[in-house]
Image (cartoon, helix red, strand yellow):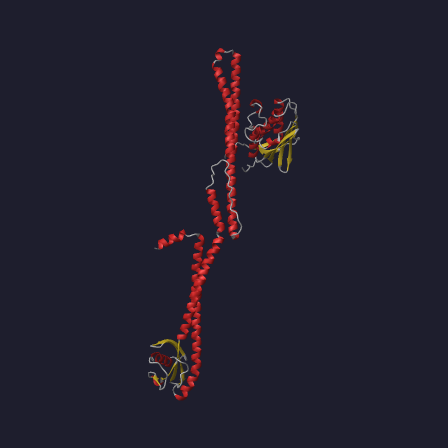
Length: 484
């Protein structure tokens, strides 16, 4: 039975449970208050009755002292007896005493007073055939004891009526409290029910879609500070989930695009290698010059594919934030590194005038010279590939606020606004019609950005018609891995 009640209680809603708990707590409070009030009222009435007995016995004591007994009963239903206890004998009732048939309580109280040093004595006893009485005994004169008794029927009736009134009033108050509390709790817990409905709506939402979003939020004011705090935390959690879903969807799109672009980029050299390999089978029937040309093209395509795979591997290692990062930092003069990259650019692209401004003083930083040189070569090559011959290119080195700045700019046509946001994306080309032999694979700027971030720096782009500038910022105190 107890197990069934517990199971039924667990199935109740939170508001009903709280209302029942409030009712039980109120019942306990009402019981304590009623018991205390009843006890206090009973004691008060008994004290009042004792005072009445005292006042009555003042007059009765004079009467007993003069006449030896009490001739007149004070109130209806009251009893009086005078006992002679002299000589240590058993109490002896004097004549004309107004006593009930059962005089044992009177005799016992007179005997107790004779043997005690207390005067007067108050006791409550039951008289056979009469009910409960309040008895008071006092010594009138040496050896003479006056015992008076007042009925307690009025006191008990008053207490019983008080208990009845309390039970009725407390029962009505308990019912009103339970129903009103249930209504208030239901209204106060309504925001929690709304959040539960929102959670159910989210659970029924398809989160497997690539562009899944959570349009539901816990709205509505009220509920108090705690509910507002819970609602805010709930909505913040939904925002985080929504952002995570958006990031996941974007990552999936990037992955699909990356796989497609990588497959496309690798397919071209692989097809070339396969074609030249097929041609090389018949090299014995060809002239030596033709065989050499086929072999050179085969090596060039293999080398191009190797560079592409190296870039992809580097990007993968940088994205994974491996413990053994592909950086070997050492104390390096950045200005000298820029001058070396400029010399290599002039040798490889003599049709692009290059101006270098980096000062005579060395600029020593802790960095990986090979990787930073790779960044500089990529930026300079990007300036030469995407501008017509004769376009001026500038490289500037400066220090600003604890950061080393390297600015690579050209006076080319600039980058269209719609392409500026994606120039650092992998396999992205501004000029879609440009051949891969001339335009590259679209990984140069992506590799440059990842390497600069691995050094704790940043690379930014600013472009307008007639000028395009890439600015590399590197910390002077050494590489600090950027937060991803």
